[in-house]
Each structure stands twice: as structure tokens, then as C-alpha cells.
Length: 95
Image 1 (cartoon, helix red, strand yellow):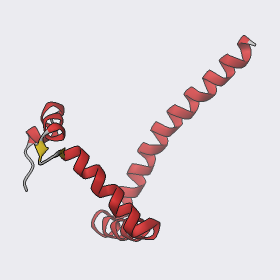
Image 2 (cartoon, helix red, strand yellow):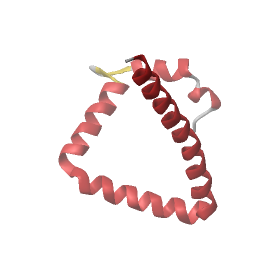
Image 3 (cartoon, helix red, strand yellow):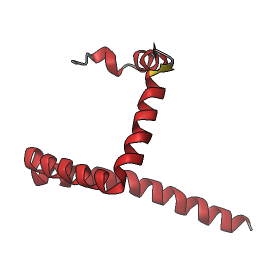
Image 4 (cartoon, one colour):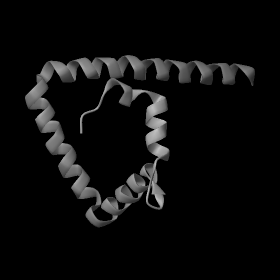
């Protein structure tokens, strides 16, 4: 299935979620399938496929990719941490 640029539009995605196929929506069917997969395969299955995906990503994108996303995550995470610290300090000062 090829995805068009429209597929990433929120309105189109919302239509897909509410689209009925039989007695349930696509979203409900996806959730049900995910719960069943989790129940039947367990934690080890997800660890294995995550590791496999990480290895493949490493082969196709290389170490620079990980440096870049790590840097971006640090920027975003750092902002969040700074904001939480600021809120904590402000809350302590109000006491």
C-alpha cells in the first residue's frame, strides 16, 4: 500500500480511524490485534524485534544518524528538564 501526502493529514487519518470494517473501527481492530500479539508473544518478542530493527537502522543510517537523533533528543529532553526544575524552584519559593 502506497501512502500519499494526504495520508499524513490529520483529517484523513481521523477518517481512517473511524472507518468501519465489520463490527469495529480500524482503530479498535488495531488495538485488539496489538493486545493479542502482546498476550501471545510477550516481552521477549518485542525486545527481539526492537533489537533487529535497531541493527537494520544502524546498517542503513550509520552512526551519524544516532548522533543526530541523540542530540535532538537531548535538546528536547533538556528543555523539559529545565522547565520542570524551574517549576519546582518556583513552587518551593511560594511556600
